[in-house]
Image 1 (cartoon, rainbow over the protein chains, first blue to last red):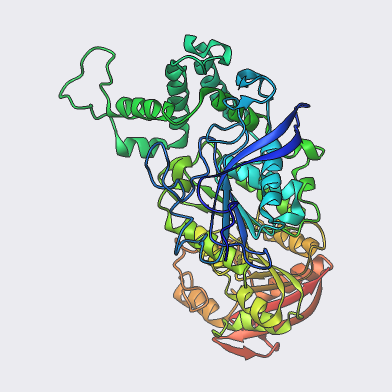
Image 2: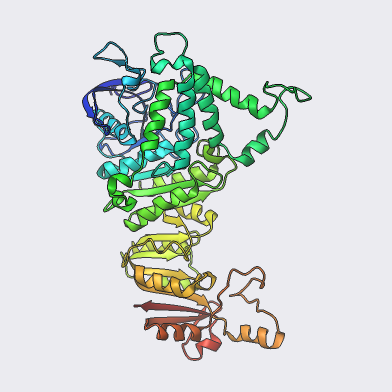
Length: 373
Length: 196
């Protein structure tokens, strides 16, 4: 069989637009960086689309080019895992607005020949999904056997099921919500203000300088990272233990291990992420409210759907708590949809969906296989 | 194919093929899986215990973690041909409301429960002076989930009062079916098929 350059690792495509955006603007063309694993079967029926979270990327099951770390969801995607290239054609695309190769504020504006920066249009979760749909068209994928994602990835999954129900046979929504709560928006605003308060941000025009707003982005990441963990998890991991010292310094160095850990999280994040992308993607999440575009009633988003849904939450996730998943389940029940829902127990907070939770794999595996019988 | 618990077997026998069913308190989905595999029903379930839900979803069933007392309200009226409540009625906080919801969501409902007027139960209470611990009620008073114990006659009186029609009823002692005659004294379990 000849090699099809559309498929494989580290793919990149520029798709002709225009892509009309919810905010009123449009993109003349859309760049998408993506990866595929496995082979699309002759009937084109075995595609599984993975949607990544806020700071995620297309390297779902391959080594990250900057950090050298394994794929962010190798626990879920790979040989012998619930999503397996031996039987699935797996696609993961960097979301619109991000900075790993898809169109975003760091991309060059073809009209101006310089990076968009803040001239990049504000985008929504639905815009991200529409861009992914363009990619699937390009790849010759009509219907997805499943669309799967956690956190912001789960929002895209819900949006997929609402916008293109005929293209989604099964939807797996993990640790997510159908809208951003006031608290979610509030935390994001802290992050954005940290970036914009960094003098190096320069109104977003920092790409020509060798001096990005790293301090602001690091603080944004530190604040957000706390929301991904649980108090019990932090206590267990760090407690009040001191960092490489026997006594408090009576200064503002990172005395505590938890401070040192957060600083490390912040500093390592800026090496792989663009500050403007962080602004745009958090904004897209804040604007997300799936009920709003369906007359204020979430059930209307799923009326008449034939998609099977699997909703999973974690008991220590306070960023997207179980109550958010439950309201999705109630809406799906009201719409008569086939839905499974379970709250899993894990000490890891929101991050649990990325970590070793064997029950999560068992649930997703059983759910997907039931649709493949 | 595993053998179903006797009360579940009665329900399974009487569900029409290809029906839409909601199993409230479905456990790990034993009955749902059986009905799916042999009767080709469209089965949905609700279960309180997360471990049971995970097991049910892992066997490919549509089961949501939820509570019969609070989570039935979201289902549309007449969404199912049968709502099934097996060995769960006596554990709910408001059994009367749960039965009302079952008959709103489902055109018919199967309800099974342990009979608190079974003679061994009466014996234990009347002569032993102790809360009964029997095969059907195996847990001590402080650990039991059964907070609204009822008898077969209580159930009959309840449905008569509410104008609910009993289409059929089956009675079990041990694992054997027993007759309707004297069931309130002689039957350990009852299974009712009711409709609005």
